[in-house]
Length: 74
Length: 181
Image (cartoon, rainbow over the protein chains, first blue to last red):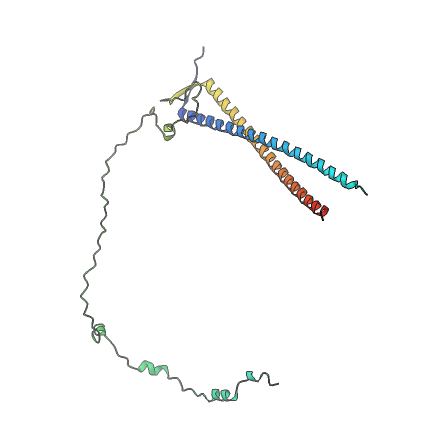
């Protein structure tokens, strides 16, 4: 059975430290992404409301147009 | 045409100019030959002045400004060579860990003293993990760029929408005015 080969790591503590910082940054990025998702959901709702308003406007304009194109004469 | 008579010089003035006979200037030699009085330095202020004679000046000596700085003698330090296995505590290591930081899985983020040895195959796995993380990071960057482009397009669309709304509003006001005239 072959003996295991070990590799010496000089700056182990620095590596550890950096990994901790990366994890912290990842958590930060996750929180930001969550916030972006929430904002996007809110924006989607606004767009839906906008679509509804546009539909209403379209209907009303059609109604006005119809009335104007067929004027009742006395 | 007598309108511009005032511009012409009067006859009397013209005659005056012609009659002005200036005396000749004296030659420079006359001034160089003139004798001017000479004053010596001692006589210069003695006559006609009430000021007392000045005392001879003492030689000027430079005085060093007095300061409160006390010279300190620095102790001689002996430089000792650090041992090879000594662990240096740097500022980075001294930093307190953040509250939300979780301890590292398995290693519990302990500060190891002395050299650390890792099995070769474990190191290979670690390096592969770093590679994969770097790839994921690159992919994330690409996604970020795409999102930025989408955001730009969205902003343009919103601007268009805003312009259309304003136009509709203007036209509605116009129709309103027309109908109620």
